[in-house]
Image (cartoon, rainbow, N blue to C red; front, side, top):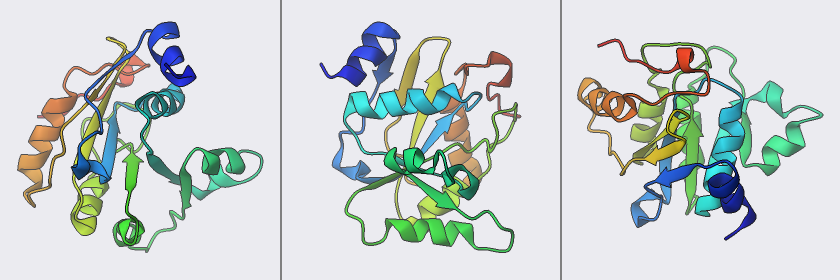
Length: 184
């Protein structure tokens, strides 16, 4: 058992339900919900390390400045410019081209505060990049990460969001009152 897995399972008492072992997930958009605290970052790092899977993330370019920029890049992060007027979906989707393996994690709530609807950029990135979506529920209430099977976007946003929202139902964030509860 590696150090990360030991910390994740034995010290912190967490478990992962599901994995990224299928060949179909060498390229995917991973969405992590609920995102309620900075604790989600290190728990995600521990999860991917204990599973032995490479998963990257993007963040606002300001996070990648000194003194933390080196650390975030080392952890698999890539800065993005969030200046208005850019086709961010297309530019992020292009990152998948030419890579044999690329898993991009996004927090589709767009904030650590309470929301009742997910931002849909992740969905359109997956469609543009022609990759599946993997959902990961960060459930601090049960101390578990639930990892879904790949969901290939059908192009029917409402139907696919119903599946996605159902997957995250009941997951309790580190800050419970900010947990995602969809407006149905």
